[in-house]
Image (cartoon, rainbow, N blue to C red; front, side):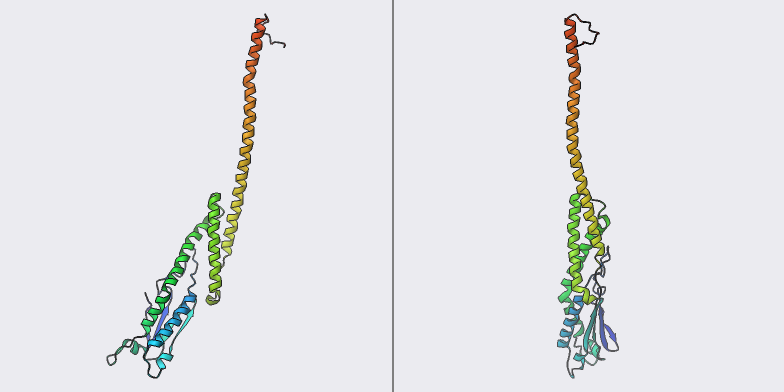
Length: 248
């Protein structure tokens, strides 16, 4: 998919943006901007090189008026000689000598895979980040929290890498403060879960001791009637009153 080429009074222009290439601008869930800026410059440089190498040359005016401008939002390509369109598409009196669209298509083909891979990586991180920021520090087992923390550390490292790679080019940077806050919340929950687990282990040990103590007391209570009954039998056999509590 390539953007539409505009004919402006014989000059040719094309605005290459994520939308014109069918690429996402932001991630769908967390709305993180995807930094294509390094690829826009690469696209422009390749386009100019190929267009100048393939355009028809007579005086050199056409070749000298091929250029580009890129920023964080995309890349504008042009051939602003007033007869550029006639050379590209031909007329009823001259054959076409195309150079513009082919150069643009080839330039994008060189970076299409890299741009799609970058978008895909952001999409995958976006899904994980949505889950993490919505549940961090509020739910999950200890094992799940450790897994969440590992995923979040990976995303933070990825975002920091993108900051370094694109901040100067794009003129903006990613604010990872919410990610660091989420990491702190998950870490706090891990500590709470560890404390709860330690408390359960303590209660479990205490419960075992109490159970043993209660068992000993019940055993004594169960033995006591037997002992009294044996004393009563012994008194009867010796002629004592069975209704009288033995004195010994």
